[in-house]
Amino acid sequence: MGKNHHKLLNNLQSLRKAKGLTQQELSERADVSRKSINAIENGIYVPSTVLALKIALTLECSVEDLFQLP
Image (tube, rainbow, N blue to C red; front, side, top):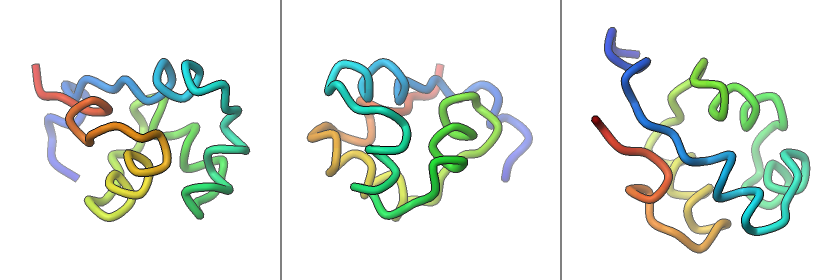
């Protein structure tokens, strides 16, 4: 993980809540652990490209809707 990951803007929590999903529900649909969803939402973990695409597909949005560089 690069040094500047803390600068990554992360909209996962708001998009997840807008879909009415809990972290657990999203994790089950995206086939990832709930702890991973929590870590992504809190900016602790930057997901792989594959995981970011799976989450975006699950939330019916683009990866750019989920994450942006400032």
